[in-house]
Image (cartoon, rainbow, N blue to C red; front, side, top):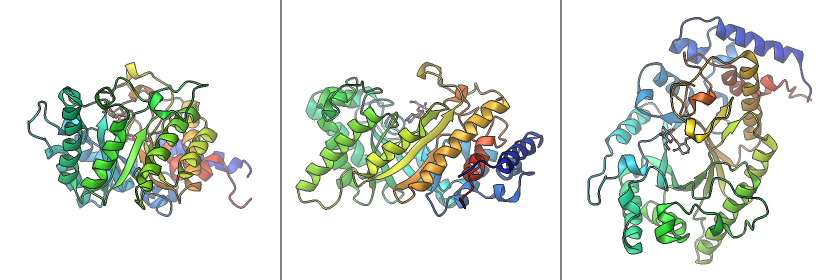
Length: 385
Ligand code: 9MR
């Protein structure tokens, strides 16, 4: 591998091309107008021999340029919010479920050949309080009813589900025993408080029974951190081993979703180590919520509407990180089931302050877009050497 000046020049040309392209618009956003021909190829086509490329869908994205970008570049989507427990489930025990927004999204996506990943069944956040209040028996029943109701409703239209989301604490401290994964679960989770660590196994067993055709995922962030990855791997290993010891030939947890909310300082070797750790368990990995913040912002500053124009240096650093990540993902194509980006443009990203997306606020493709479209070239790697 060697750095080629030519590649750097091409990237610079691409940047020049998109910055001078003036007005926003779908054609330009998705086709890059003045860019060399191969950049016009939709991302889903670029990666067709590797893995499906995804993004999120929300009601904003169902129209106009957003929708054009979704249709052009992505073959799978995750509903940003509309399949979460608080959006679907009733505000009070016994109330009605609201499936309409998610149904609408699935219908429109299906009409355009885009598949839907389910996000998410059991989570400590975005979940109505009543679901985790009451006796353990009641909470258990709420969990089972919720999974059964939701999975039955979406049967045949959603082929993989995040069954449990973010059960492990944000940070796992050094020097602790990672085998004892139960000690690292979020204590603040209403599910944990009512049912202890067993809620995880219960959720997955319920989901398996509700729809055996679905691939069941555990989804979490900070999984590039080797300590947290070890905790999750130990949890998956134990739950799957017990399930198999009962005579089942299939794993109960069949995939780990690495959310991949990354930044410029994310270590790509760490990401690689975690991917290897998970596939060593005999399960698949999905990169489930990828974004790369230029400037890391804390959770207190999350929200849409705060993007800004990036300097050339910032764009370039972000592009390189995206390119490094995608060239890594390509190496694991046999084990990576899906790479999903969390948002189309910087301005409407949940992490808008970090400007983490492939398109800018005017829906112009950023250097990051071109880096994803051709990571080899962005990194100046000569594939023949
Ligand atoms: O993008 C989502 C945002 O619109 C929601 O309001 C927010 C509330 O928690 O959740 C965001 O999505 C999160 C996802 O469901 C789970 N992983 C972290 C995501 C945000 O980075």
